[in-house]
Length: 201
Image (tube, rainbow, N blue to C red; front, side):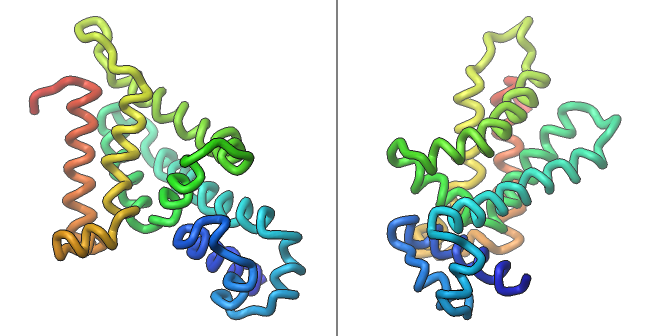
């Protein structure tokens, strides 16, 4: 199924670059190095291909989280949270297409956004909220609304990679270098743990 994988990967890149409306199946087939009839053999239409490509990436994200968590049994909640936040930043750097597509689809309500939220994003949001709630000291401090924490994490963790061309043009820094990703992950981990636990250090 090499041709199917090539089509999915090309579709993901082009949907991230050009949006659903801007990417045609002809362009995707060319990027994948296959014919349009072969693309349509695997996928009935552009919508089916979009869902397959985006769903595949989100499935890989969930699987990577599950694999990471499986190795952390018995580890304390703070350490788990730090590792999960770091993992999110690193995955976002390795796969900037994900948040580019989510941002494009979030500009207005629609069937693709509904599918994204209901099939994939809501479970991720609920897991993130549960993680934040395990850390919060609700007896001492007023809780921060989970929606703020979730969008603080997604914004701080992923935006620089979504806007990598602007970052490079503005600062001369390539945000995809391992050094930058590590430094950014360190900062986001510190920011989120301070926000949730209201620690000073």
